[in-house]
Image (cartoon, rainbow, N blue to C red; front, side, top):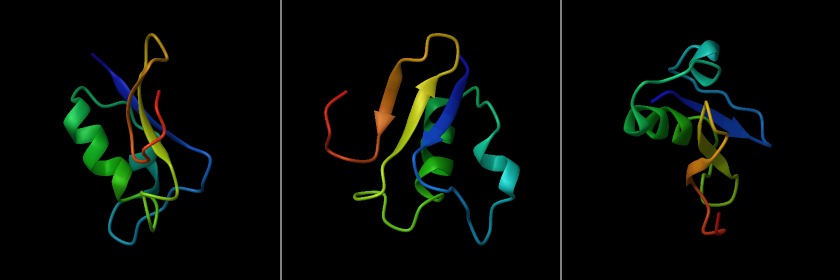
Length: 66
């Protein structure tokens, strides 16, 4: 199952390459780990992991419901 990362905020990291946030990941857990590194405060700057084929949000960093 392919997963991609989305956010309304710019995603960047001091230790990950810029393309880390545009890749498609085979593992949901790997996508989540990369996603939370993309924003300074994931509890306030929402970042999401989305099933690439269906567009369904499978994880989000904020408490907002799907």
